[in-house]
Image (cartoon, rainbow, N blue to C red; front, side):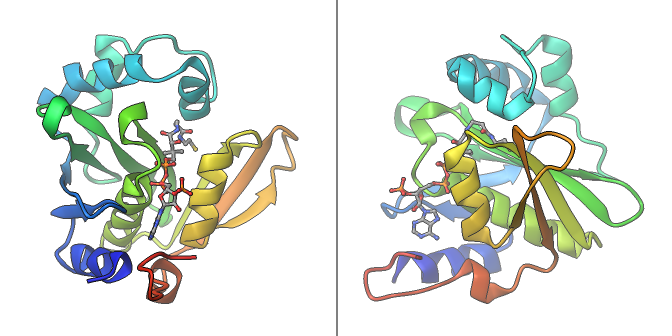
Length: 197
Ligand SMILES: CC(C)(COP(=O)(O)OP(=O)(O)OC[C@H]1O[C@@H](n2cnc3c(N)ncnc32)[C@H](O)[C@@H]1OP(=O)(O)O)[C@@H](O)C(=O)NCCC(=O)NCCS
């Protein structure tokens, strides 16, 4: 089965499983309060630049309070899925994706991964899953702010079909917007090599 077909099957199975581009399967599940220590360790494993890209201000370490807050989303307006590690990272959270919105059906996304889990397609998969769940929850539109130097995030957003425009308030940022639901044709673009374009 191609990567794109597996991805479609994973999504049809709700947010239970993610398959990386090498065919490894990972458990994707809602974040729990007990994830806070792992979240702090994962954040510490990130480079200073990745931390800045994630937070858009300087946060050298996640405090216990911050981690606990991240791990206890307000389920009325937030969703957060995390990817469970395996092998040497068994028992750790690899990262994940979240959206936080208001009653107007509009939500802001964020996504991040420990360095060991990057470039495997897992961030794309987690964000896809959160966008699909956000739609089921009634959200209509998702947006985010990306630093212009954050090439991996810009590529990911483009791949998922976000509309990318310069942030008119800040030349160092890009504004990414997408309407829900995400059309399947934007997520799955199969070819014989099993890669999306
Ligand atoms: C931004 C970030 C989450 C991107 O992570 P990532 O692992 O590079 O993103 P992806 O999951 O899309 O993986 C990218 C790779 O998977 C591949 N991929 C993604 N979806 C795919 C698919 N459907 N089929 C085949 N390959 C796919 C891409 O081609 C890419 O491979 P390449 O490196 O060989 O080109 C990560 O760099 C990160 O955590 N950065 C720090 C925090 C941050 O910047 N957060 C964003 C704030 S807005």
